[in-house]
Amino acid sequence: MSSGTLVSRSVQTRSGGRNLGWSLLSILTLIAMPAAIWTSLIYAKSATNLAGTEQIAQRIFYLHMGAVLGAGVAFLVALVGSIAYLLTRKLEWDRITQASVEVGIILGAALTLAGAIWAKPTWNTYWTWDPRLTTTTITLLIYIAYLLFRNGIDNRHARARFSSIYALLAFTSVPLTYYSARWFRSIHPVVFNGQNADAQGSFNIGATMGHTLWVTMISF
Image (cartoon, rainbow, N blue to C red; front, side, top):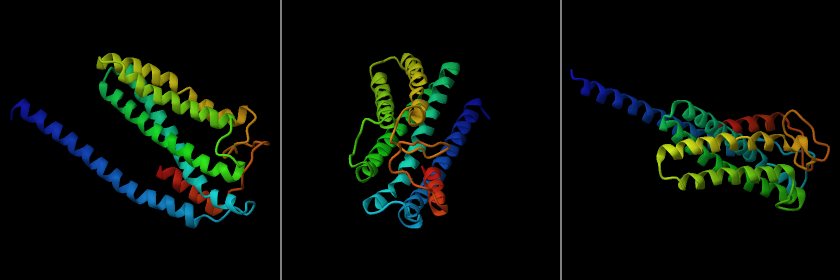
């Protein structure tokens, strides 16, 4: 058997494995997302300390948190991909970084939209210059600029190198966004491991709410 045949079979095996992985991921997504929507809209009980439109808008909180986690993971993968490229110079890591940033931007836009819908009945406005909202928007713009920056470099290796450095630095905005509601005076609720005396629209999470929160976060 020739070396060319062995290489061809190896490539086919890797390709087949990737296709199987994508198929399984697609199936899991088709199951997970309807489950997330059902638990958010039907399974989770209403918050007893909210009323009227606030109580209805509260249900978007679960999808909002799912998008938050998904965007955070996507930007973390982009960080890992950028470091891996700088260490190995393999363009595959650059492609992973770019794809992760694109996913993060989509989810970042989704969480911003969901947050605005929730904010209207809760804060009586779609937007306010709150530290959490402001840092979230800045993070989103930083990663959008990453894609624009890439398009301005023709040489693929130079593009990968400078883009990786950019993505590495851009990630510093992610923990800043997370801690902004803790470090600065903010009306945005602190959901996990913390309290915010100035928060408006927060609520205690019961059993069904907790289940729903985990389902949506895992789904995203």
